[in-house]
Image (cartoon, rainbow, N blue to C red):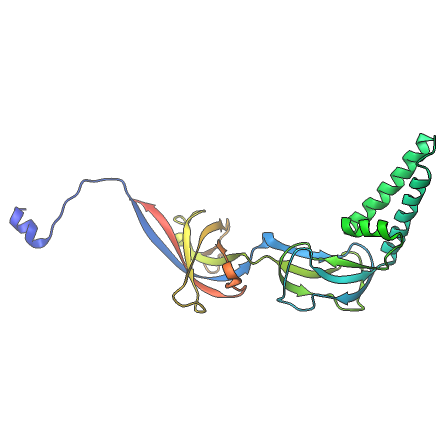
Length: 253
């Protein structure tokens, strides 16, 4: 083709090279909580709920914050056993019989371990030692910080061991679950960047990465579930929100 003709029709040439072409996969996702930050508050002994400090769903709680108070005959009896074991150990401190002192120490350790296994804190045990008398009602504290998703603690409720009273989720990081079509699966890989926009926050873009690609296919819809991880400053993103997802995929050409 003559040079004049190439200029008229806009033909341009370049050296052939291996390059990366960015493509986009667009879909819709739904916000969910990060399951790794989910905590259930259960009881390990029977008893009755007395007072409830955290009494509503959606309330933020901090680790170590009081949730409710519990009256448990088993806990009360174990406190008395621990105090009796401490008293026995103190009386035998000057005994020449090493076996007797070892047995007393074992009883103290056993009662202490049972209290800890029932989630009595070290500070509560220390207070028990200073007080010298058992506390009929003990406070149960939040094991982690987050938002209360479920709450079953009601004053006067009888509890069996294993009863779940609260579910607390850390929403500082959220998951976005989305479905992509079968044709886009090969181009979608772990670690790829993604952006999400929400109608609740026009003009604002949230950025994250692909953290999971399902190994199975939804045969009815011919889609594969992917999960994005997004930081959630200010807890703007609420579980259940829908967002428009764009995954940046790479195709070698």
